[in-house]
Length: 235
Length: 348
Ligand SMILES: Nc1ncnc2c1ncn2[C@@H]1O[C@H](COP(=O)(O)OP(=O)(O)O)[C@@H](O)[C@H]1O
Ligand SMILES: [Mg+2]
Image 1 (tube, chains in turn green, yellow):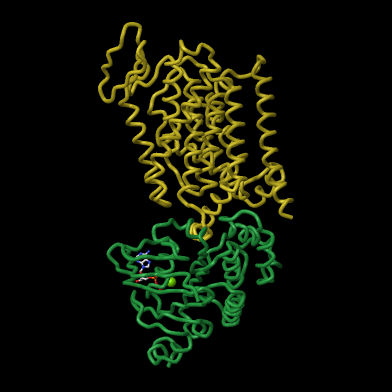
Image 2 (cartoon, rainbow over the protein chains, first blue to last red):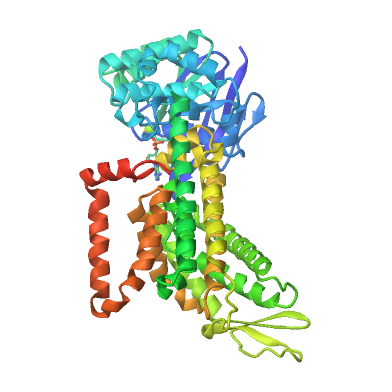
């Protein structure tokens, strides 16, 4: 399998706070890789550094063989990394369809076909395509944020806690979509606090604690690890 | 369905253009008649200038969603650069219409440049900080111009900062005298020029808003983090809206200045910035038609009430409150929505 993303020795600070320390990770083409850890561990900071919203003082980030560490965030989206930010950030005043169309902002043409694909994946969105996004339920908003990210044809899709604040049945739905995207060949970097669900879908996983990566392995390995069981799986 | 929606917003644009044209023709016809009040006739050019000011600020506040408290600063830059240019070109360009056009372009360019320069620090900030910095900007511009002296002679323009002494060759004259401003401006602004500037402003704003860039700007207003995540270049699109807004205000400033006998920097102070903001808020955020009505009505009102000198401000305040209540009452809003194109709450 070909390496698509490689993060090497990245350090990010918020003023004096050293938020992530010497973080390194890789994602191979076609994989689901998950980054799990408690609240405040530095998971979102890691994703935002990859997508160019935060800057690392050291190290390198390579995507498809090229360094992207100095690129502005809109160029990184153009290169093919889509981020679904934490907390369902959608355009509340636009309709569902307009939200999806904004997802294709960096591209021109072919939007119709992509809309069809997203609507096939999320039939709920098709039913509500003319509805103002602010009136959607939490689960629907999460679907919309994911659908919007898909509209940019990402080579790598990064999801920041897609299950946060959702009812268990909706969490199931979100994860079944993630599996489906994986089956279609989309490469995914998934950040989660819900370790159980994340490990169940992941090919490989990293555990993050207070800004450092402390464990890594295949999803199955980590699900069996005592350390992970104790800290994240309640036993 | 998407097309239908587009048609509706386009129809609103055309109605706004049509309204401006009809209003211009009616006023132009009546301003020739005897019964037309001379005060109102004198107000036609300032009304046009304030209408453009309100629409341009609405681009920053309503469409981009950033609160700016220094919009009069851009008007000032346009007013002084435009008036200086017109004075300097007095002999070179004898046609007043052409001189006015050049002055408006120069006012727009200078305000656009100043807008670009201050947008670098300003657009890194959000919300309250941005408001505070734009407020300071307005005051700084005022102080700078109050200390600027400009003279012209055969060799061209001469500038001096802080020191009022400029030695000019024979036949030379002072144009700008620091705090005394520019006296004896040859009034070359016309109602027709004001009308053209309003139409041009509408054209620029509507085309920007309906473009790909416009969608990016409105997406930024709606949710900055989401906008970044879909690959919108935040700085670029914020700057585009902000600089366009500044340049239009510069043109409005030049139009205004060249319709006055005298202009002083103190005229374009914080109160003026707030006044323009009041037009925008009353007319509705993002609603250009509303800005036109609010700016025109509230510019005429104090003049029309001059006869009731003692109660003038009282009536003005009451009208302000009524309009505010009106635009916020759902019943009235519903009624207005039926009567006028694009009332508050809808984009542009
Ligand atoms: N904007 C910020 N300013 C200062 N500190 C921050 C900011 N965002 C996050 N942090 C801190 O950085 C650390 C990592 O945060 P984050 O990446 O959001 O963690 P996670 O996503 O794993 O919950 C935390 O200690 C958090 O308090
Ligand atoms: Mg987080």
